[in-house]
Image (tube, rainbow, N blue to C red; front, side, top):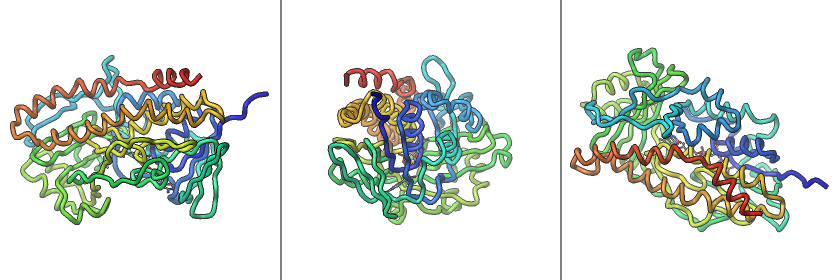
Length: 394
Ligand code: FAD
């Protein structure tokens, strides 16, 4: 008799949840996704996808879609001092020189992830409010009265995860002291702007980043600045473009030119969490920001959620209804150390970017030397190690 296919319930239809759904389906697992918002969607800002997650998107056959709606980033990418003096080129490839990093509009990424899924597996308007499990079944319940049963529940419900407390004691997110202003500008407003380059300017307590989206038709910008008390308390809110311009006045005149084009902007208070001691309990596990919210200073939050999804799918593909709890422990065993080091690395890199070291010569040397860390980060392929972990399950 053939064993029944595993059934997985995913709570949260963000980048992490939707990629996990694609990866699980590619491995022959049955999936349903429950998202609280009335429609899938994302904020008007970019996300930088690096080779470690691009190769996973290719594995679920989304490589061509990323090429089509993303912007390939490479040539001319560099770090600069606040006034535009070059510091070092930026490593955006893996060590075989495969130039695969892409700027993506977040809404475009969500759209291609959702469009690749079979119809009727994503249920919007479902806010998860509870979780129960028995020896045989995992069950998520929702504010609208619905319940979803499966062999496994994956909580991919972001930094404020409703289900995190089911697997680990409650803890507070940690505020970094900074906020990020984000937005996009049509490239034709600044036609000479490099449309293949990731560019970062570093100053005292602040840094500024741009990279292209949508085949270079849009420029994504992020300005990182210290927060005041009001900013700390609102997680995200409309920002004041004039305040943003003032924050970067006196920097490289190219930043001034770009910010002159900003008529509306949004700001995010930047929080992370200490690495969690555990991600799973029985048939429930955490994925993406629910498990490991991190500061954006290595650009890895979404990339790591994609690695999580592929690791989980690879391991669950070898599990059955009786072994899923062991499989979930294997998944977290595989992932916790890597993402913990990236969470810590993002904090350290933020200090570097904000020139915490007053000796700019030392800071610049650290920035140049950081290429080796990025290469290791980007070279990583989560699949072979997940396959080995799955085989060890027997
Ligand atoms: P989320 O995107 O938060 O998705 C969670 C989903 O769950 C949401 O759709 C939410 O509505 C839903 N949800 C929440 N609660 C419930 C519930 N109770 N029931 C049902 N659904 C629920 N990462 C990168 O890799 N590269 C970058 O360049 C990058 N830049 C960044 C810049 C900034 C300024 C910031 C703040 C972050 C950046 N990140 C970047 C990080 C990245 O945005 C996140 O790590 C990533 O989006 C996490 O995806 P997720 O699916 O885990 O969580």
